Image (cartoon, rainbow, N blue to C red):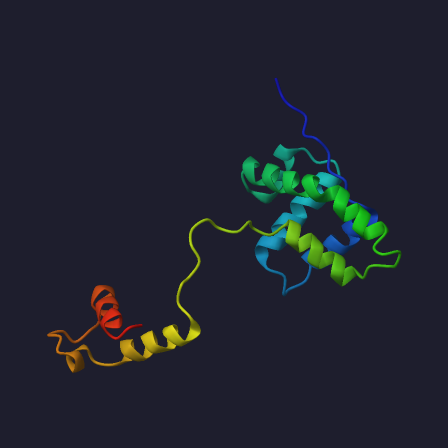
Length: 152
């Protein structure tokens, strides 16, 4: 028993913006692929057709279609009526990219400040022998221990 993929809504303006953007040389590859998924889905292609055409896995197609579908009402409203004025194509493209962006990764954020990073880099450029270590090259462990001693 096969399932029918639920459709996504892409307005004519959104399709035009996505089509134009995915052809830009400066656009990151992952955005171009995700935009192509949305455009192909909008043209009525089945998931497996998209998978075969783009040589990607079906989970990827479903993931980006679901992300778009979850935000499509907001995107359509934004496009049609944003504070009663016309929204620029560049602004809409930024919003589309937000939808097609990766979610934040789990785990803790970095705890080092820019100053700490600069101090660590300076320490790494110094010879370990200067600190009484019997080696000529820093290891991560030795660098970490010496940074803790220096209060970095």
